Amino acid sequence: MWLADRPWPSSRQRQRQDRDPDRTNEGGTTVSSSASPSDDSRLEALCLEFEHEASFSQVFVVLTVGATLIATLGLLANSPGVVIGAMVVAPWILPLQAMAFEILRGRLAMFLRALRTLLLGVGICVLLAMAVSSLVALPNVGSEVLNRTSPNLLDLGVALVAGAVAMYAKLRKEAISALAGLAIAVALVPPICVVGILLASSSWSLAQGALLLFATNLLGIMVGAMAALAALEKAYRQRLFSNRLGLTSMVLTVLLVLPLGNSFLRLLQQARREHRAYQLEATIEQQLRRNTITLGSDPAIELVGLTIDWQQNPPLIRARVRVTDPQLPTHAQVAAVQEFINRQQAPRRYRLVVQRTAVELIGPETAPNPTALQNTSDPP
Image (cartoon, rainbow, N blue to C red; front, side, top):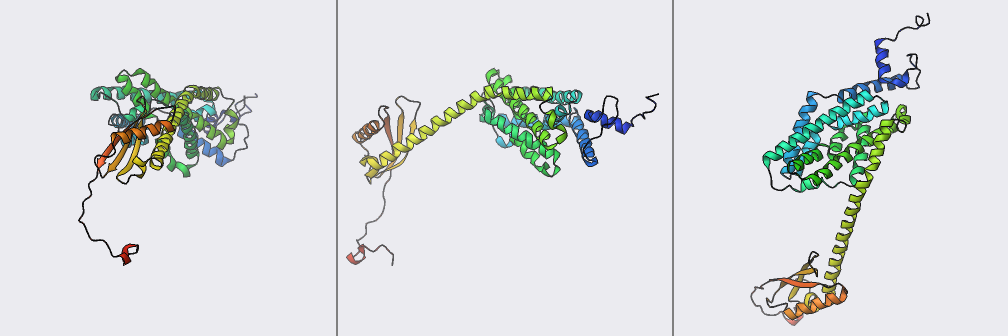
């Protein structure tokens, strides 16, 4: 019979066919490939490695619990160094890379296994962070928590680049030392710990911001890893845009541009306002030093620095001076300087207050030098 003329594939061949569907035709026979035997063995080893990393194991649970406890305690203590330690311990980038690999492989079952592993880790992290935060019961959270509640486009860019470099380090073992730095650059566990901490205190809107940061890092790493895999491995290059899961991931990543873009615009506007305020402070200080006698030319008054409180109306200028005469500057002098500032900065008006520190000069009297030595600047 026709089937009898065809030898059944060995177990090794069946295992290879299962790992690479493109290598078999409809009849089940192996299709010739342009890849060299060394490439085949390397890809097979890579498949086994990703299959192992996609599994929910005791090691994954222990590292997840440890990273969650370290990150949560570090966030509550507002300690950046402790949070960085949690980033290095966290194992979540492994199933995330496996998800990117299985998307391009087209193996839904293995993708779902890696996704299940990651979601179980997320669930453990949120519940544990909520429990620790409830036990500690701090009245307020620090900057380490608040800094992870307003992601923007810069975070997405970091995640995309880090995902690509992480996959490169996976495929090129000589770059494996970069993985620790990548784990720090794009953190997955701390944002989810922040979600748990904020949920425990019923801060729903801030928790949504932390969850958006986690989604940004998650999709950014996965899409960046897929792009790097497609660029480095010719066998998967055509699947980047022909795979439904891959297209879905990229579409979701593009959709993140809307909320992240709004946050980035607010950040940019704030930075521009702060820069304009800094420039204006420097301009006013320079004008006072150059164009006023009171704060520029009077040897008894030294202008040390100047700040502007923009929260008040009119803005309040605080000039810090050191004086050798505790009666200077007088109220009339300060009023004159304020009038000068308002003329220069019209139509905006300012209020000026001077904070003076009296300096007392102490030293014995001495006789003057002879006329021959009076103009000599060099010491004998």
